[in-house]
Length: 212
Image 1 (tube, rainbow, N blue to C red):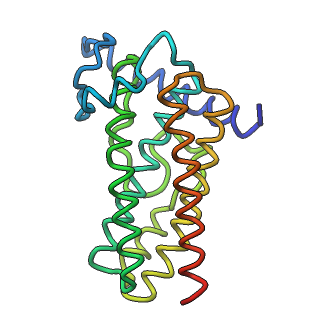
Image 2 (image 1 turned 90 degrees about the vertical axis):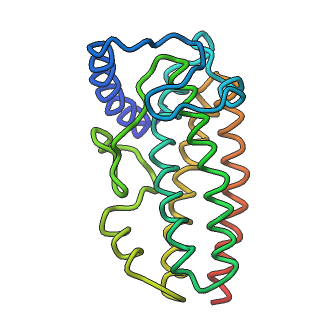
């Protein structure tokens, strides 16, 4: 296992322990019934794709806890394209990203609820979520997002594509670590889907950049 992975898990373990104590103090029910958690939950069908506490290991939990804020940032970036992008293909791609990743956020939220593990909440729109200062590959900084929010037209397209390529590459890195270390069937299936779909989107974004 890589040093980067160990550092990332150590950072996440501290966050998970703190959040677990907080949840216990609130008297929350962490049963694995696949029900609705305090963060919106996920459709019952989505939880059925994973969510077995017996099957999940620490890699599966880390994958979901880190990929949720990672996806949230991608969705936010994609939403900006609706009013700022110039290229119709960029707008279509942004909507494709949003439509794919928003349901995955709900699914992973459902898994964590079923596993009785903390669901990331209160993450900033940019940068690393609180307590996760290490190992969130591809995440944009606050300054990156401010710059993207202030752009429009062709300049927005260029920044969006450049940032989203890096963002997707980070997601693929995390997904491959889940495939190497995770054991939950649903989490592994999602990780493989992320690798396949986001690599395809990276290829498309590079082609769009090349013609601009």
